[in-house]
Length: 434
Image (cartoon, rainbow, N blue to C red; front, side, top):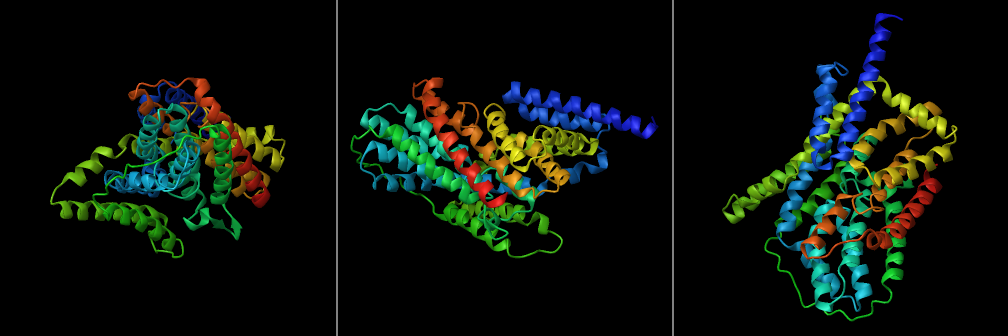
């Protein structure tokens, strides 16, 4: 064995050990996952699996800027009271508890297509709690319905969830591409059809709740500026998808989000004659998620450099027997099962290059597999109470109100909701993209 090949084997084994330790640590010690991600990145550099000169280019700065910019605008948007006001207006159009729950769930889904899932739950859940108290009904199923609905539609748009941003950047997709791509209906429609099917499930589960609803609560909006910027970000991302910007085209989405965030903060500070908006954004910014993603990007670049991605892809190909349909089915439902217990951000980040390698090995179009990965990983978190951050946030709100969520209470909604949405999305993607 030559010296070069011997070093390659050493690097591959070292990378595999570091990756496994990191992933197990993130799984077992969820509250410390950022430290395991950064520790894994540091270990890859210390053991020279990835050359130091490749560190900065291994981090996807477009994704980091998109997430940071969106987080900043969303924090200002929530603080104005606009989301709660929209929920109040929606409730005025409902007649019974059943339709109120469905309306709140649908509203949560629509909002979470553009706003972080956890932020959506934090916005809408208090409305559900207020309605439940007024009508003297158990708020647990109401909040669970809101949480799983908000988690569902993160896959609908480019800015709906971190996993969507990861896929969009990796596959070179724009905001419009999530709706129509290469002349075919894209993942937006698969997600929306799944959402429609899941609302039917909610109607079946809540059909006996026929108490009347009369919403007297009307939240006051104290500033419309962040709402305009929220809409502005979406419009600019759509417009930018039709243009190529020399030198910075690979960063344009991130630059749009971060620029709009900065302008929004400055104008809000000027309007209020206070630094409170800046302090709010700094307080609400999820720096741990940003740091974790930087670490994950370095780790994934390292295992790719070491050849592990190709090895995993070959293993998946062997299990799927080289069948396109078999591989697609395996990726979707394996992602559902894994994401029920594993955070979907590191999972999707690790699996995107694997999926691409599988497609390249078999000479297949990777888009069908990409979409299957996102559908499974996004919706799989709804199977368990801890499978998605939105679910954890919803359960935390209930706990503060003095309610404990039993597994059977969550499974009653989560399981039929998840499998209905997954199967609809799974069939839609295969029909249009295989």
